[in-house]
Image (cartoon, rainbow, N blue to C red):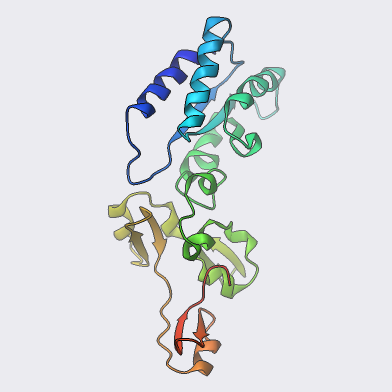
Length: 227
């Protein structure tokens, strides 16, 4: 597999264009064999990688293998692809069969709970920081419910990712049948609507799993994600 000229072309495209709405720049490299650029082409590849790193492009790599077991061909491909992906390499690299690629890589690019989504979706403010925690890490209903990327399942007694975070498009987000999603115009992301806290007294507010009493303003406010 030769990728030098392709990497150079990508670097040129990103250099001549401006990021849209502050979104991350992402490159995904697929290969089913060793990266074999040599001589002048290898120099071009190294220079292109430096340019991409300088542009803060998130470079991911996928080795596409034929069998469920890893063959020597797959191992050799890994060894040549990993040095090209972004750091940390272990979080920017996957070795998958072709049928696994949609579910284990591509479908979760906009999902902060996905294998790569948490690297792509930026943390902009402390209020949104909870969105980027893997939902399964929350073991309490209160902290799960406070995260705008997660939903608590009483049936499973587990914290699950919310349907909203998978919507990358404003129109799709706002058409969510459950009407529980809201589009964040600043972050250009889809989140679940934060729970309302209509309580006017401290006791009822504190008894609500989604709320907390602000002693400074004497108001009932949504429980922050990092509480």
